[in-house]
Amino acid sequence: MTGLRRRAAGFADAAGDLDWVIGITFGSQEAWYKARVGFGARGAEAVFFRDGEYWAKGAISMARQTANETARTANIGPVVLIGPPGSGKGTQAKQIVCRYGIPQISTGDLLRDHVGRGTELGLEAKAIMARGELVPDELMYGMVTNRLHKPDCRRGFVLDGFPRTAAQAGWLSALLEKELFDNNADNKSDNGSDNRSGKSKPCGPVVIQLMVDYNQLLQRLTGRRSCPTCGRLYNIHFQPPKVDELCDLDGSKLVIRDDDREEVIYGRLAAYEKQTSPVVEYYRAQQRLVAVNADRPVEEVTGQVFGAIDSHRGC
Ligand code: AP5
Image 1 (cartoon, rainbow, N blue to C red):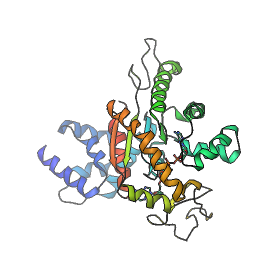
Image 2: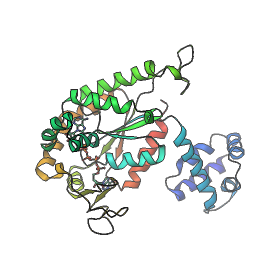
Image 3: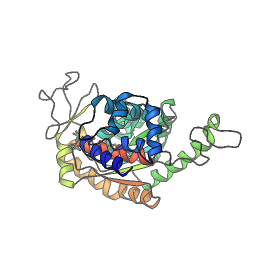
């Protein structure tokens, strides 16, 4: 067993972000054999019995595919991304959508959509957003409730930009508890337990705090560009498009967000410090907070974010 552990550690080093493969395979030697039978693939068997550094590519991708399939069918529950403007909430939310197949709920995007359509909410929110201030809590609740009731949220969802005040955090906790107990009657057994998770208690959110240096935030926000057609994000400093100002995927002309002007950016960062920092404390006190160093390249941050979700979901 010690020998296997040593070789598995070498595998993790060589394969970078694949530490979840070890999670599937290890435990005891017996567990390892079970896992091997479960996969039933020649490549996966070869991995653990080979000496040396090389691991067959087929074996690795097969294991990765298995974990991805699991991620896309399992109950993920609510994931909350918290971080200042420019910390990468939108960027990471899109990675979560790809891996876990749950929807991104960006309150900023929802509000911008209302502004674009000129709805009553959009008209109220427009000037507030242009100043970099937060839209009043009461205006947020109806919009978020409507979105969370859509059927695509049943396995889970990633909230990007909500909650942003202590009041919103309390409101969300109450909603999640009520939703899980009252509204999912079809998922409950006669004794009231939740059949989807096999638990009788509601599953609270995994709350991931993205931490980034202040100067880095300024560069990210002033350099941000986005595609108006597909929503893909770019940054002229860190992730430029292949052709200047054009989307790599559909060739649309990239746009700059109205509130990414320097004078508004300072207001947004100040609003975060004043109104959203208490939300971090709220979740820290509930021991739900997972802090991630988001001052790293996107893929590294994504690895940390997936790790947090994989180890905390089903809480
Ligand atoms: P919202 O749209 O939520 O904006 P925000 O919180 O200010 O966050 P951003 O979208 O600016 O940044 P992000 O963290 O998503 O970073 P991104 O991934 O884009 O809110 C806008 C407004 O709506 C608010 O000001 C408020 O008025 C209102 N509002 C929204 N929700 C509300 C609520 N709950 N209550 C009240 N009002 C609300 O990345 C930024 C840039 O950095 C990109 O260019 C990206 O490519 C780059 N980047 C990302 N990660 C990395 C990395 N690791 N390395 C290098 N570059 C990176």
